[in-house]
Image (cartoon, rainbow, N blue to C red; front, side, top):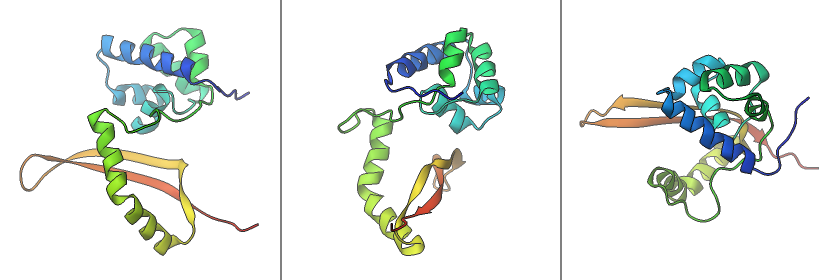
Length: 156
């Protein structure tokens, strides 16, 4: 039976424990995702407290990270989502995403609505991919793909 968490503190504490285990064992997020049998983006978000893992994936992640049975059970609970507290983010990487949305948010909204109509892009029926590619001008570029199902607004 699925269970929901209403206080994010337990999942936040578990995320700290899991990241400490990941670091101690010198694992990558990809290695953890491979054990879970799920995408690296989904698995990382789940371990960081933003998704529930299916029971087999939670067992595999728990075994790999050396988590106890209570932690494995907690990995399976539906979390209270949202990992950024109120206000402007101060972490430079997270802030840059905030900045991107400040600059391009209205543009994205205008283009989505022009192409699809009134509605939203789901963050639940969603895929995320991050790739590192060579920059033709030198260095590297980050290619981030956000792939969400479009859900039209339905008048009632």
